[in-house]
Image (cartoon, rainbow, N blue to C red; front, top):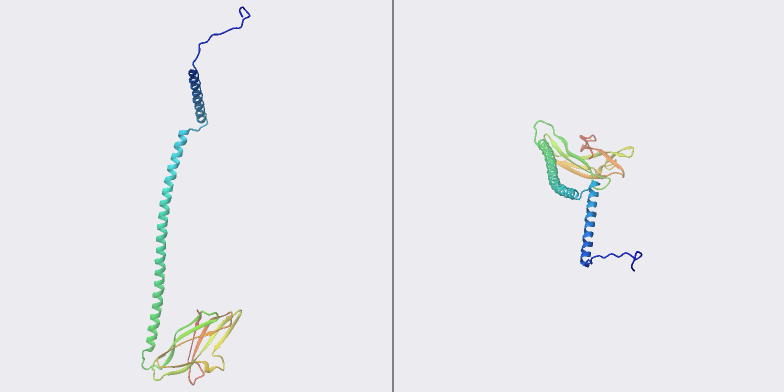
Length: 238
């Protein structure tokens, strides 16, 4: 159509297809760059920087590694200190044990010295009887007690000492105090017989009622032909 009413027409130069694609790719890259820049600007504007965050992560990792190393070193030092403390405790326990043993040996030597002194003859002194190492202990069985003592004859020993022993046991049974005589009245034939010139060891056991506790024990030494004890001595139970 020609004339004023005819439609408008424009003529453009033909653009190759690869130019169009390159233009689109370049435009897409520009958009991505702008988006990335906008994102980074937004993070910085909000107070977050990736490089600073990476540096902080590295710093924290280094600090954590240093603290782990210090912790391992402290654990090693603590283990060494604990081993040393155990060794010192073991040494202290050995020293206490040795001291206790030496104390017991010293006490035993003193008793032996006193014992041998009693055996030494002493002229002019009338002979007598002495009780040494008198002990009363709870035995392994419940209600069973064991006693032991050493009798010596002092002074001049012109003859053997002959006699017997009687024990008086003080018990605590509940709220009551009970006195037990060994041997009991009428059982004189069960008494411990004595016949010695220098010394005689006496040892035995006795039982008490269930729940009774021995507080102390007294030994009475009788000489044959006498109804009164020649010697009495008491000891607490252990």
